[in-house]
Length: 423
Image (cartoon, rainbow, N blue to C red; front, side, top):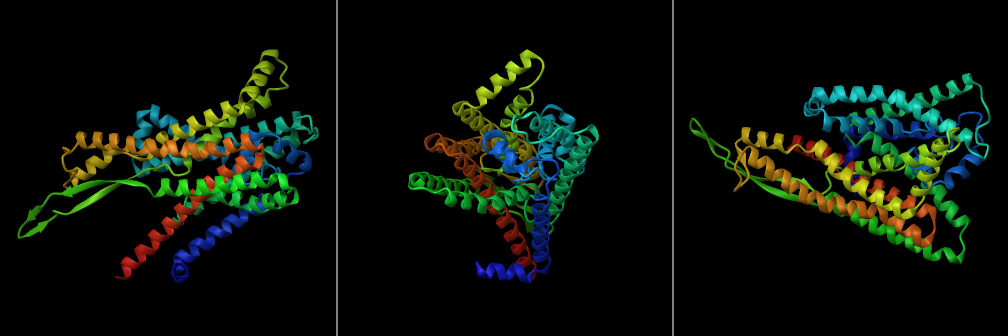
């Protein structure tokens, strides 16, 4: 461990990259503690603690929403924009073709950034209106100029975080969006521990033990999922060029059990919290049928069984969906054929593509099922213990462990490249 840290510190560019990421996260955490004037923060925190959907949204904003800070929306609008374009890519063949090329992906990312701006404005206005209509007096009545100023400030905060995430991506030490969510979760850990000890009584012992058990199971499960892979044997045919013989080697094509990483959890939380949030937005509408629909939606999503089933299905489905986005068996089969490679017993071309697709679906099934079970395990424990922070803590661990593994792998990959260059 210490030897790896010494290597990282000696590699100047890698050390600078990590220090730059730390600086970006420090800016993010500083912005998360700059509140927007005119908000009753104490009443706001009570409101979020009593609402499961908003509690999860606050988790992904790094606590910025609970403080009503200038980055209260976090990177949620950008994630929503990314989901929109990925869904469109599955329905529009031209977008799917663009996503397979570097220039096309860059253009889609640019469009996602553009869409983030109106989405951030819409979501910030919806949140302001929701809090104004709450019965706990979180936001006082404001004129239209103050409301517009607040929306612009929150939108600018989201764009700043999106920019910081892109800067972190350029350093190639992890996914910028995931790292910022990770930082927000870690930043809330000390206050959670402090609150636990401050309110501790002997009856909470079983709850704490349950949380520790869930944490251990989650950590072990996520490590197993991220490290597990199926190796597909690949053989390269011999090629004779003049008096020299090339190829004839054997290798393997790794298919990871969880190719999607932590993104299915992020997508699932973004979707599962939307109906309940929208329902609260319309709870005081003038139309009677809107009020009834909002009350019904809130009643359905407050049911722990319905919430757990929906969360399970979304995590399971998004694991397949995101894998479909990033894994292209047809392209892999074409590249193998161009390089003179083949899978023993499988004909090149379409047969190889079909084989890779079928094998990937079988491998991903176990990963998606395990990931979904880990995601709802804290909710099951919450129904037993009745503790809200236990459910959020399980989701947090799932994200934290996945992000740490991803960062460690990327740093090790860069160290390995440097060792190879020295040799």
